[in-house]
Image (cartoon, rainbow, N blue to C red; front, side, top):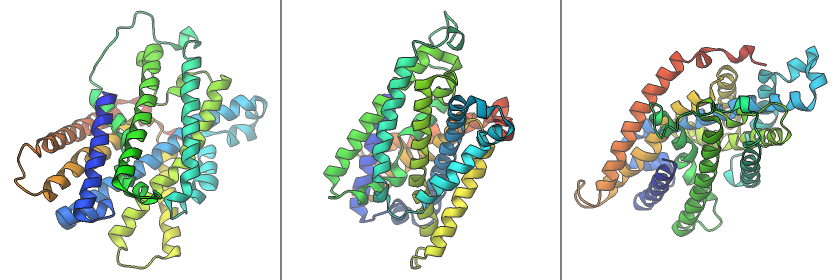
Length: 373
C-alpha cells in the first residue's frame, strides 16, 4: 500500500507541475481558481488550510508525546518534585517549545531560509529509523505483541491507514513554494527533487511500518516511539530529535496556512508586517490550543489525511489537468486522471467517516489531555 500510494503521489505532483506550466499560474490557489473560478478557490483554500492546520496541530501533539518522556528520563529527581512535574508536564513543554521556538521560526516569509532545518530533518529521520531497528529486537517481551498473533494483511482500518499514509506523503500544498525555492527552477530539476523525496519517504515509511508490525502488531501506537520504555537511552535520543524535527517543520505548514489567508482575503493588498505577525500569531495560537487538547495522534492524522490530503493530492491535480488539456475530456488520455479522482473521493469519504467514528468510540480520543503529565 505504501509503495502504491507513493507512486500515485509522485505522479500527481508531476501532474500538478504540468498544470502550472499549462495555466501559467505560480500558486496552487491561482491554478485552481484559473480552472474552476471562485468556487474552486474557496474549496482549495478550505482543504489546503485544513491540511496545513492539521499538520501544525499534529506536530504539536508529537512534541507533547515525546519531550516529556525525555525530560523525566534525563532528570528523574527533578521530575519527582512539584516544580519538575509542572515544568516537565505535557502542556507546559508544548507551550514552551511552540512559543519560544516554533513561533519565531514561523515568522519567516521565505521558505528558502528554512533550508537548514530540512537538513536537520534528514539527520533526525535517519537516527529515528536506526534507533527503532536497533531497539526493536531488544524490547521487553511484555511490551511486544502476544506470541501467535495472526498476521493480518488487511482489516477494517485500511481506509484510515490510507489517510495516514497520504498525510505523510502529500506535499502538494507547499510544492509551489518548494519549486520557487530552487536555485534553478526548472521542471526537470523539480521532478528530480520529487523522485528523490518520494523514494526517501517510501523507504523510511516501509522500515518503520515493518518493524512496528513485526514487534507490536495490534499494540502499535500512533507514535511508534511511545511503544518503547521511557528510560531507553537511544529511543530518548530519537524522541528528542523527532520533537525538534517537528518544531522546525512546523513553520513550513504555517507558511502555507498564512498564504491561504493572504490569497483569500488580502490578495490585492500590499504586504503588511503588522498583518503578517497577527495572522501568524493567531494560527500558532489556534494550533497550540488543539495540540494541548487532543491526545490521539492517530485520529488527528486520519482526519487530516483522509479529508484534506486526499482532496489536494488525488482529486484536484487530475481535475485541473482534465480542465486544461485540449481535446475531449473523456478519452484514453484522461482515463488515469478520472480513475485517480474516483480513488480520491472514495478515500476522502470512507476515511473521514470511519475516522470520525473511531474518534467517537475511542476512549482515548474522548479524553482530555489536560490531565496528562
